[in-house]
Amino acid sequence: MEVGEHNQTRDERRTRSRGIIEQLEDERAEVLVNFCRLAGIEPYENSEKQTNQEECLRDFCQIMVDYLAAGHFGLYQRILDGQERRQSICDLAEELYPQIAKTTQFALDFNDKYEHETEDAFNETFSEDLSQLGQSLASRIELEDRLFKAMR
Image (tube, rainbow, N blue to C red):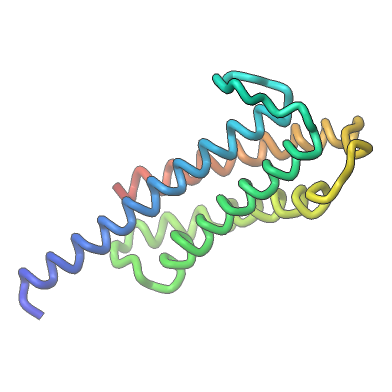
């Protein structure tokens, strides 16, 4: 492979990585907006506020699972499969991934517990679970941002 072809291939991979990162950041923002709706915090402008808590919970769970899947299959699996050639990124991903995986599992457990719940789900246990999920998502965001910064 010639130097020009190698540089073009490298640039295409990095452009693809940046696109994946941007997608994840967009999905993450949507997760956070829906988390705030679910928690009753409304720092968003929306004329169609959801009043149905069950629908809000289902929407949140779906968006959250989509975000988790996009991160896992779009970015982390790509790195784990050896498609990332920068050793510093691979080393950082190896350091961060176990912690990110814990946040993924916590979020999936929350989803499994609440995605099909009815109004009865909104009790003291739900508030505590949602609070812990918020903390887990905040940790995940910090970890992802470290990886994203290194990849850019």
